[in-house]
Length: 114
Length: 112
Image 1: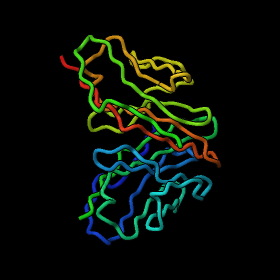
Image 2: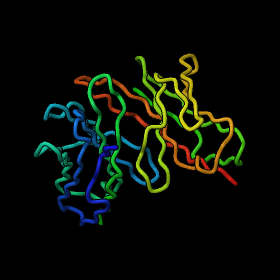
Image 3: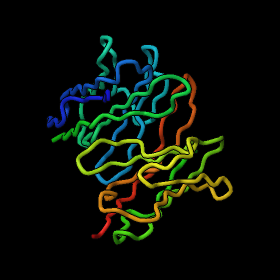
Image 4: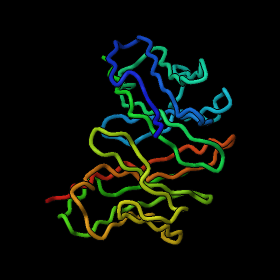
């Protein structure tokens, strides 16, 4: 059964550094999402992406964040200048098409900003 | 604003006992509700959604619009049910976004 994959599984970075988190959604899916979960808190929506553009973003998704689908398979989340409070688990998800509301999640990338 | 509330952080039950994981929501439109489960060291995975009205692994959930609830139930808990359970609501935000709003989750621990 196809699955969403994410790399790396863990990343440690220094405050102020740029990080890129990578996701490979399920191949025939059209809608892509990033969520994050700070330790002990709820899973929070960051951004959704469709047809090569952002369709919705939360207030968390400020100018430090960007997303890209550089080729036909990868979907990336870039944090330009990481802050301590960016430390979290980041989940990628994908969804098929209209009428298919179920989102399929990747295993997550645990980001630690020191 | 939409919100999902799971009042219990941790729920411990004995094997064979009934389980009820509570979920309440607030949403102005017609919500679509889900239960996602996360077993230890595994990814979030869909357990069930209200519109399919199915039973998965013995779990059921009924949407009660009057009480704005979507509680998850199972008559007889099994050890393998121990996991983190998240209630989630989807909303249409334009351009087919369907972002998910999650509750904080309830950790179910089934005692042998």
